[in-house]
Amino acid sequence: MAYIQFLGAADVVTGSKHLINTGDESGTTGLQVLVDCGLFQGQKEWRDRNWHDLPIDARRIDAVILTHAHLDHSGWIPRLVKQGFTGPIYATPATIDLCGILLPDSGHLQEEDANFHNRHKTSSHDPALPLYTADEAHNCLKDFQPVEIGVDKQLSADFSFRFYRAAHILGSSMANITLKQNGSPRTLVFTGDIGRMRDTTMAPGKVLHTGPAEPGSPDVLVMESTYGDRAHPETDPRPQLAQLISQAVQRGGSVIVPAFAVERTQKFIFILKEMMEAGTIPRVPVHIDSPMAIQAVQIFLKHTEEFTDDTKALIAKYGSPLQWQGFYFDSTPEQSKKINDERQPCIILSSSGMVTGGRIQHHLVQRLPDARNLVIFIGYQSPGTRGAQLKAGAKTVRMLGQDVAVRAQVAAIEQFSDHADTGELLTWLKMFPKPPSVTYLVHGDPGSASQLQQAISREMHWHVDVAHYLEKVTIS
Image 1 (cartoon, one colour):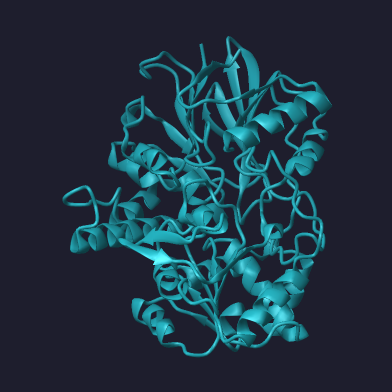
Image 2: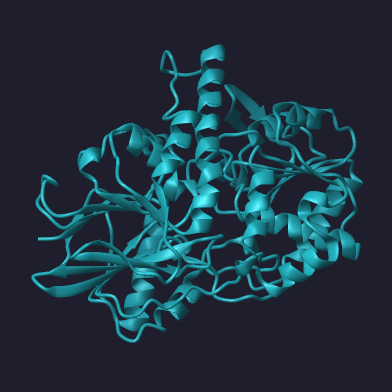
């Protein structure tokens, strides 16, 4: 009997991995297909799971279907390959392009962190090791195979899938899977992450078109619930952003923005450009401090078919972001370190967005103790991350082996999220011609998933369950 096993993003908002097994428990018959293969991020107990073997031998997994490039959905692929997986990894062309920079960078950052801990003896492991290296991440890229949105891909006589647009980030998709059991077809939809439902002033700066596709009437729906317990603010964030930045610059401070290297960074630099041209914020140097920044922008410029009209107009008027005056893409370590010599106000965007690693740590170690500075969070902060601690008002935070005093102003602007909120998710679900037999909620904190479960049950009377880690559910 075919089943789904939730190997990640169940009871947590990270580490998406969902195994479809059409054969027996051993994985020696039928197909074993993994939908997403993400890193666990956040609390130590979750990160430790990255070092655990899967309950099924990686060599017995036949394929990976990848919904999008974010590391909590793709970042464990090099580890899977390291453990013996040799099958194809199916993704949209844009997702493959983004993974080509994200995965090697992830390996590089893990090597850097391991080396730092070994030099400073700040790890409980001796020696500290990376989960995988940049070379190992790069080597797995040869296993990626492109599948265009809306094209059927047959894995066997009884297993096929098609991607639908999810409108979350560049290339993001939902996987619509058809299984035949005893000659009878069953349809499963795995949403990955679902994007915002509309282009409005409440979500300005959107580089890509919004509005996920409606993928028919699945028998089983596996759906994210990241923002299942809240509604996005319904006000334009630009006046608040202008006030925060202007005040920080007036007091001689700099603005530090922890931002995900893909989508959030691109969105934010477009907003900054618009506001500087409109005169609502002062013109100060903007540093995009990420080794992948130039490559990421180039990939975005390559996939203009996903741009909004506003984005096309902005590029037509001002040219490529790589050529904007006063915007600096600091890709080398030397360029990153030189930012520390800045004595005048500037804006620094650097990853990771949740301050779990990367260069942002070095900028925050230097600038958090100074009350003139401002830290702005523009993305979701998973519980247990340094970003969540700072957002919650921590007076000190431990980074790079030291306790750092927090005197800088810390603010959060929620409108930049690329996840649909509760109301938008319900709007999307109401587009379905008929309800699924069962809906499983994943990729959400327990409270978020539970509240979304109640909202769907209350408003739509669907059968909705919250998925649990390592749980198996039969596809009947």
